[in-house]
Image (cartoon, rainbow, N blue to C red):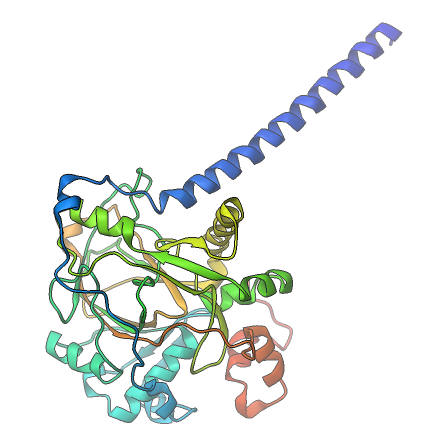
Length: 392
């Protein structure tokens, strides 16, 4: 090879490396822009129209109050009467989701209902199939756990009717497919929440539930310490505007409220993220760009949490009973006949979110209980391959 050819080859290799580096950098920039775009998309609204300016919500905001004591505090820690009534107890994933087979919710005793509250607090969401629960029975069931909550857009004072959606979840301003916990902008966001499906399509319309306890646990200790001192600003202003422009009549005005970004569960004492991409617009202690990037990271952390998630396939008569305080969820719209999906959701008010620094992460709890066989239910759920076997 001549010197000229060698020089030309070196120049080509240099140009290739330079352009490769440039495109890698461009790819990173595009990813960052896309991430920030997704974050800001959650808070777009459809415009301050004449309808919005003229609308007056009939009811005032709900003031902060102290709800009744969580029914899980009254439960047998081993949940003997509840679990004995089940034909099978299926833990659907290590971190979240248990199905109780062969139980009729309408037939549970008060003691079994209390034990169910404890199971939901521990596992995030508990599922049932083939339930004969009527609407009146569902209302009675949820009021065992506390004071019934009402969604700001809820037409019937006792329940929300959940319908099928075929929205373009990638369209500007569309939030129908976004992760959320229900109306976290309230002073007392919901705690125990029940969704009973009346009718469902053969396929489509599944719901995904993700453990925010596990989400916090999977952060590095550095990020955990950082987030523990922060407060999220939750707002319903954009959803209020979109609701009016969509033809609805929200009965409470929009609200903006701060809650801890990391909260402590009152029953389990475990630390959990309290992140809600549908309503959390800012982190109070951070500057603008700092907050945008922090919330963008949290959204990416949530959407990448397949290992901390359970996906529930609905059937008519199926019920999900979850803890809105520590679980984020999202329905999967599109691809089915939306007229075939209808459910009834009921919930109770929870406590005002709080952070207790003496609480534990999930990993800390597991490590503390590892040597105590009588208290190691969490260990058995998370370390069921201790013999050396692996699950692929």
